[in-house]
Image (cartoon, rainbow, N blue to C red; front, side, top):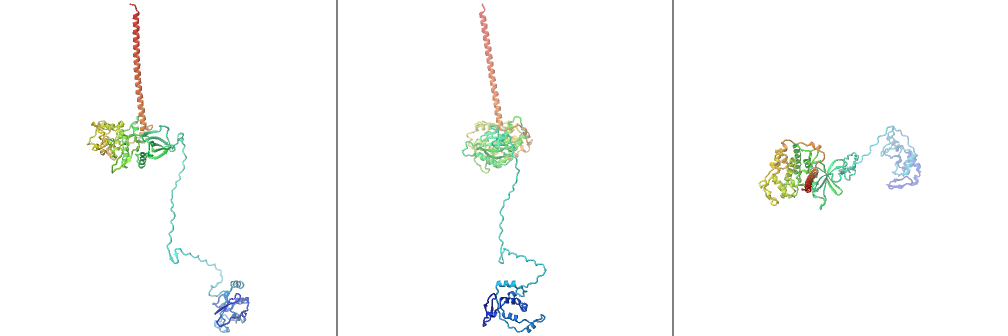
Length: 563
C-alpha cells in the first residue's frame, strides 16, 4: 500500500502493490463538481452506519461516484428486505481503498456552502432534535483535589501557625479632676509640701536632723518630713538612713509608723511619714490633760504589740523612749524613729555596737560594754517608758555619763550581786566601772504604791539585771495586767479635744520657757531684795545723818547759850 498526493485540497489515494498510479486527467473534475457530488451523497452512504459524516468523507472514490452519477439507482421499496436489494442490484465492481485530506480553509468553505446533514457515524454523538424542554442543569464544577494528597497518598496536614500572642491590657479611663484652687500661701510654695518659714514648722530635732510638720498643697493631708543630715558624710548617703528606709519598707503594722515616700528637693533628702499629732512625752507633760489608768493600759498594750511584731520579724529598735512613741488624736499609738534599728540573728550571736539607746533608757549590760545582745535591751527601755507613763517622770535621770547612769540605776534597784547577774563579771567594762559601795534597793518602797499590784509585778520582771531573766514582749502581753486586771484598756477619745500638737519638741520648748520664766522670776526677786536692802540702807543712813545733824544743832545751841 502506498500514498500519492493530489492537487488542491483533495489529498491522495491508495493503490495496491503492482498497480500503476492513475493519471490526473482521469480525475479532471473540478473541485466544485466533486463537492456537489459529495454533498449529494447516496442513500447507501446515508444508511450505512459505518460511514463517517459527510464533511469527513473522502472525495477521491472517483469510480463509485462516477458510476452513481451516470447510472441512477433503481427505486427500492423500503419495505423490501436487504436481501432483495442485494440481489436486484447490478454487480458493481468494488473500488480500491483511497482517502484524501481536506484543508482547514476548504472545510470552512464547505460548511458555509452546504447545509449539514444528519450525522450517522457511531463515532460521534448523535444529534437529537431540539425539543421544547427546559435545558438540563449545568453539571457542578469539579471539586479540586485536596491538598492532603500527593497522587493517591494521603499526607499529614502542615500545622497551622499559631496566632501571635497579644497582651490584653485593661485600660481604665479616669475622669480628669479639676486642678484644685490653692491658697496664697500654698501657691507660693516651691515644694509640693508646704511648711512655714523658719522653725515654726519644726516638731522634732536631734542628731539625725529635723522633723517638719508640712501640708500637701493639693490633697491637704498633713505629713512629717524628716530631713536627713548630709553634712560631714564621706561615703555619700548616710548608712543609718539607708538602713532605716530599708527597715520601714519591710515593716507593715498598725503600731509601726508608715513611710510614704523618700523625696529629694534642692539637694536635700527627706523621708515622708504619716503625721501623728502627739507623742508620749508631750502628753505626759501636758498641763491640763491627764491620762486615766484605762488610757494608760490602752497605750501600753499597743506599745507592746508593736514591739512584739518587731522582735518577731527579727528587728531591734535600739532607741525606745517616750519621745519616739507617737500618738494620734484618735488614740492610735505607733513606734517611730528607726535610725538605730537593725536586724539581728536569732540562732547565733553577733557583735553589735553598744553606743545605742538614749542613756536614760539604756540597759546596764550596754553601760558595762556588752556587744552581744538581743531583744532584752528593748525590754529594759520599755520598762523605763512604762514606769514613766505611770508616774509622769523618768526613773533614771542621769547627767549623760555611763558612771552616773549606773549610779542612778544602783540607787533605785540596788547593787546587783553575782547571784542576781551571773555574767556581770565577764563584761569588758566591769572592772573599770565596778561599784565601790553596795546600795540597797528602794524600788518597792518608792513605786509599789504608785501602780497597781499586777503592773508592779510586771515592772519587777522587766527590771531584772540578768538579760536572760527578762520576759519577752509575747510574755508581757499574756501577763494578767493586760488580760484580767481591772480596769480594762479604753481608747482615750478625749484626745480629739486637745488644742494644738504636743510633742517632745514643744515640751522642751515649754519647759525651757518655764525654766526661763522661773529664772526671770528669781532674778526679779533678787533684784527686788537688793533694792529693798539698798533702800533700807539708804533709809538707815539718812536716819543716821538726820540724827547726827540734830545732835550737832543741839551742841551748837548749847554752846551759844551763856553760862
